[in-house]
Image (cartoon, rainbow, N blue to C red; front, side, top):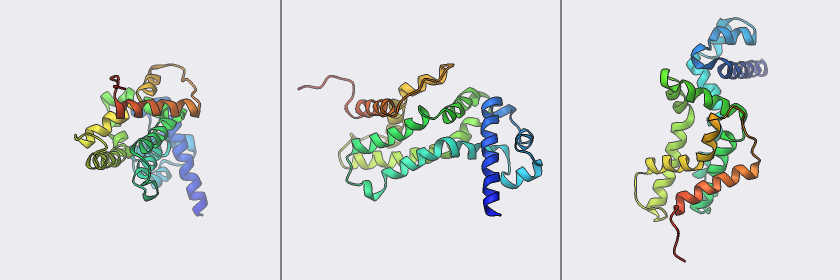
Length: 207
């Protein structure tokens, strides 16, 4: 019975993801999800209490869960021997693998960007793992400052600046009709360039 329940839940999440991408957040409805999956709306509400909760689950499943995992790895004791640059490279690569290498995650991100100005979808997106991940990244920045690896500053702002640099190239894809295809090597290179610029800046360095 548990296996069937988990399979049903997954089918609901998959159907909801497709509907959010096709219809947008505002036009999508629980009734439409129930029709797509098959079964009653009452059964759907046994799994998710609201459209908001369902959307948050979709976002966590296809986008922010991987970012949360990457952020938690930064604090993992087994990675304590890594340099700050190595840690940030790993985080940046994981982030871009989702944003630039996963069509479904990017489509959901597009929905968020497109509707953020006239609904609560932006706040839901942030609450669905983004704020948690940024909080963890801020802790890493604060620790690096305390060790003298970064100059002093606001760790929250530093985390935001870092992620903005790393995803700068990928953000341009949101405006394109056809999504470009990136290899893992290209994605990793994008991340490494962002990390390098964050740590060393754009000014020429004296030899």
